[in-house]
Length: 245
Image 1: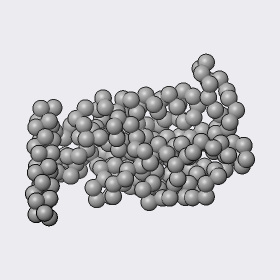
Image 2: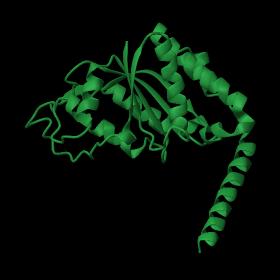
Image 3: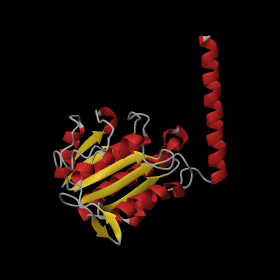
């Protein structure tokens, strides 16, 4: 199995909780023999889509821009499965991840078809099979619902086929030393999910539940700890500014 993993986080690996989750998942995939290529969008030169439609008219299937997206699209077309990974930014994917999707418009035809009584565009090639992964600092998994709805809308339009969705709330606490053991359980479950995906073509619901397990005991404790951290961070930066002045 050939897998392309697209990481839409602007953060570097040591602080990126998206990367923590994705790397564990990829490790599991590789243990079962999958060939996985990781694409960190922050490292790529990918211009913003301008909606010029050259990829539909002047050079069908090929974008007018000559940047790194050309190689990304080649890798995507050759993959059996894609892993889309992005942190939750303002209740949706990051701008660079959304631009990755916008720039994948050459993979679709300009012609209009009807799908469930709504207009859509057919794909030029095979269906895009997707495992979607996201992290968020919020306590509740409900914050991912708008993004999940967006994915399922695309699936109903025939643009993707969702194999699995993996959501990890409370993600900013994953670097807390006090939660090291619980986080290790989460990452071990993410690795297990990767193995299951390649071995079975799906991920067990229990494994996903383990990935999404609470690492903070209750909502109020989460709120208190989060606000304590932000107060500390604001005060620390205030002292740094005073020292510089």
